[in-house]
Length: 560
Image 1 (cartoon, one colour):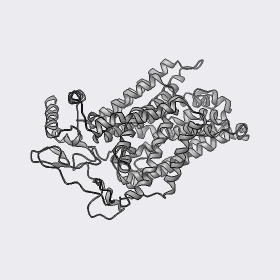
Image 2 (image 1 turned 90 degrees about the horizontal axis):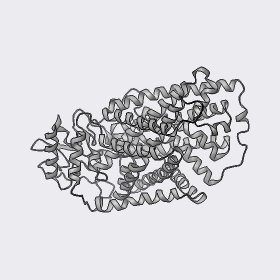
Image 3 (image 1 turned 60 degrees about the vertical axis):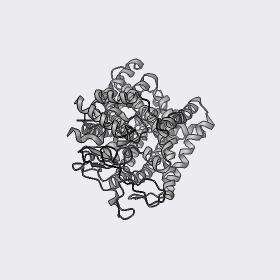
Image 4 (image 1 turned 30 degrees about the vertical axis):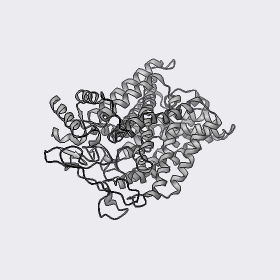
């Protein structure tokens, strides 16, 4: 094994000046060379490079291989999936269409439900009430967040069916704006957005898990953080061990989560039938929140829905994405919105708004009031929900690392997969290490605000990318197309969500976020634009290849 990896590394080093050129680009096709090795666009082996195909949009850029020669415009045949059994690499992932994703249901629904309907409903209700000061306004914001998430996800569905390579915003920024903005997204998302998502969810998991054993006082902070770290390690093991195991966890935990939601809704209905409607009677009492407070309230509410774009990170692994991606969105997000609305009503049927604000674990308080001897079901249900949601976060994060790395925007090692497990282990480990650091040094509320402010800058950028490509790439295949008003509305709202808190309640954290985003250019110019590579990086890459038993996906044929 060690000899094979060393042989492979030397072959790559001699075949090309840049070690990463064998796995660059979207959906890079492979071919066999005269010496029996596999190459991508001719970069590995003895044959010369293939002639690039240019797109028909007049931009002169490389046409993605998902668009076939001679096919009609806007036809779903452009996105026909290749048989994963007949090729070694499908869009950079040898495992292609995964058994865990395809099935009788629309394939993305478990991932969509399990991540979108994750920890947020158990964390956000208290924060929303604090920031709005009104039950009625908080309820409206819950529904508005669901509608905004649905509109954003539908716009992403068009982007995801135009370019089915993994990476979501990164791939769309590459198509619309070029390399520099795409690099800035991968820089921020890899180091901040995805790790902070996982840290928040695992802290929520730990809060509820420890709460079940502590009744007389608040859970010790040190214990909560240790449990969160254990959760990260468990989720990392699941996703590194097997892609199918990771998706099986998604499916099982989604089913368990729906059972928990039914328990809360039925308990709330029972309380309402007993006449406990006093907390809903005067829903709009209290002062109206200002513009900045509404924006930060949206941060809290949208955190509960965040994950509506996660399917776009794994489109290479979804069977028939041109149909199943929008179908999963249209079914999944309205279902989550309905559940959130009913759960909030159930909470208010069992406790007052002030009790919700003061509770460290709202669902646990609800269980104590309603379920009696079965109150233990609530912390158990929440831990199941948050564990599944964290699993979905890491599942998507590893694919972003993979997509950006194979384009040369991150370390090459992050685009490698395990030789037997076929999982992107380096990217998963990298994200987990950063998430662990955030767990040790952050809190749930501070991480949510920082995440939401930064994320909506890039969500707005994706909406602008869709609008731009309607004009710059009019002939790109669009099996699913949304009315142009949808990305325009979402773009306008994203500008408001980013600008309003800055002008209304300026905080130094917002400045830090902007500085961090543009600090990525310090690394982009020398290492990506100019192609400079430190001499020691080859040795570092080889060391981690031997340690983790990983190789570039285009070279998997050597291990068959």
